[in-house]
Amino acid sequence: MLKKIDIGKEFYHRLANRDDRQGDGKKTAVEFREKYLSDLDNSNVWKDDKEIIQLDFINVKKLGPSFANEAFAYFTQYAQPERILKKIKLLNISKVKELIILQELKTGYSRK
Image (tube, rainbow, N blue to C red; front, top):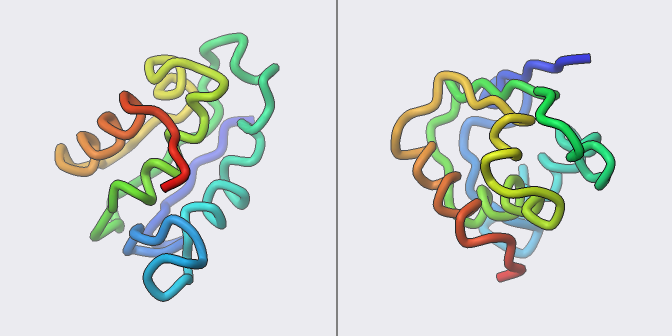
């Protein structure tokens, strides 16, 4: 079943903390990934290009690279960036936020 999440309303408007050790340690990428993207944390899910989730960025004010790496590039262990962006549809995202995600997907997941 296709899920659609308004990230800014349902999670938080400022996406900056990788984990509980960064910034104020609240509303982290790890928490976001586990809450909203946990269905994707399985190698079998990545065998096709079927869209699974739509993430609406309309109410997101900030997106940091470390958040993008932990939340999205984490899945490069399963799939190439092109396939990740077919499974996870990005809606109402600014060019800058999109470029941050694309750069993190391109460089791959790294525990910084």
